[in-house]
Image 1 (tube, rainbow, N blue to C red):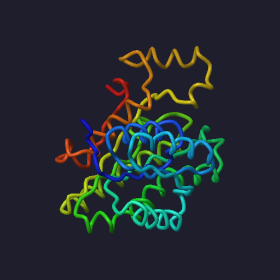
Image 2 (image 1 turned 90 degrees about the vertical axis):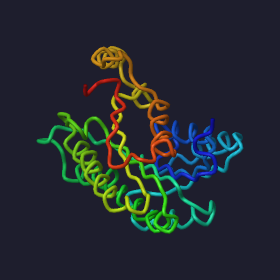
Image 3 (image 1 turned 135 degrees about the vertical axis):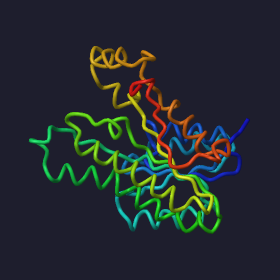
Image 4 (image 1 turned 45 degrees about the horizontal axis):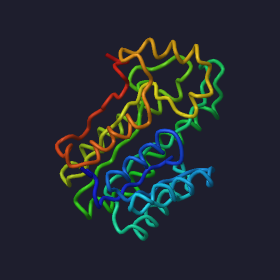
Length: 248
């Protein structure tokens, strides 16, 4: 059963990791997908060609989610190319971890700009379209770190906690127009990035999770399918922890 048949989704940071998983699974569920990348154009184009073979329209756009003007231009271009925007997934994000005493102002500002301001930028970019349609689903990617904090990640935790407050406020503002806004808080998800860590460290993290494994991009993507589809039509302003029980 294709749960997103005929819907158009924008996925920021869609060329690798969790974003890539979302692009692939959304296409399998019948969604047309516009996704952004910052620098890896080859990976993005390869993904677009591969996913297009599922019979949906898929297009990659180079865009800086931290830039308000880039985001506005992207929203307009996607409307021009696809004709509608039904789903927005704000997934673009970075880390610049350090203990607070060693963290530079630049590293704090950059993480807030890319992780949090990008959510403002892109929500503004699609809001008018969704208001006209009187329908839409916005899904913002937070983190368990945004829920409980983490030593060495004050900037990242602040950005991800900010996403939760922002999303709950958007849910209140736009609910009367049938525009829903929810948050997914992933736990330890195994991607290309975690593949570079040493196995002993990774295994110790897995052992601390009740389900005794790291999550996959598909685990996050499937939660996104639910929140993007009509199955969740009465759910808004919520934070869904997809973490194998880590915060239980």
